Image (cartoon, rainbow, N blue to C red; front, side, top):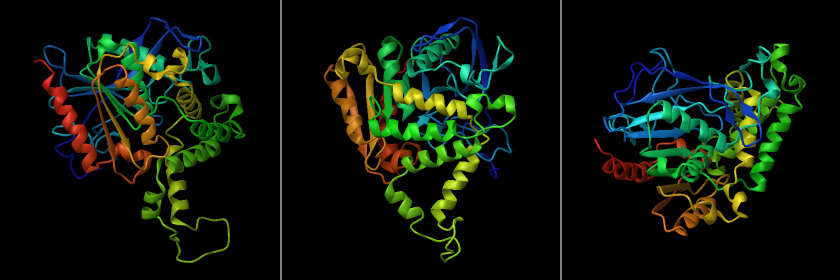
Length: 382
């Protein structure tokens, strides 16, 4: 655990839960008759209820975005770098909300949840969920919290795609959209990476057609491979060279198939820590949601036309070494917003961390992001 919780942390936090009984119709054609969302909040909602920020998480993220769950907690929320008193997303000035998306495995209703019709885990019977479905469920959570309009909706990667969907589907309910390391749709290469990851899981002998819960097991081998593949794509060649190079763990080549290079050890460690904390069926669902996201599909491929409903001001941020969600994809978003005469700021941050840069404390990134958050504060009424 930390020797003491830092003064710029939101401190000890506890997740909250809401049970929704109104059915949710899904883009896939399915329906969730009822469901639960788990979420966390930081800071205080002001009297006019105008200082609320929604943070949308990425593929392997969840609702625990900042703070600690107990004094013994060794790992803070996944965006602890940016959220807290005096930080970029200042919890002294904003009321910050983040929920675990539907289909998740950290408390919200998902494949591992009990199906009320069978009293067994949903498993593969859990319906395919999409980015618009997540946004619709988040809008209902906003209603429960009595937040009519977000000061901003913010997200990186898959979270940034949710921000775009929010701006399209609920333009009257957000003042600002902050879209970080995202894309208007996946490239064929990205879809290919996701398919290889899914195949690793599906072909694991312990997958049991997605009903591994009934067998008291899980497809650990497949999920490990999926995580290792994904992690490689989140890093740049530069950062891998800097962190590992071709360093050997024992200083010599052993001429066998054991772990010899430091990078091999790192990938196996990342995979081992991921397995046991993430559900394989959720991984399949999340990657499918990524693949399906394409708001311009409804407008004949015209992204500007897809953005016609948008009214929010926007900040779009990309990173030079992000080859999975390259800066060119962010510039597509910027152009389509400009084509609609919207106010949009764009920053391409020089960073060598790859896609994971959006999680890091990079000075230029924090400066740009922080300056835009000051602009959001200026528009908040007390």
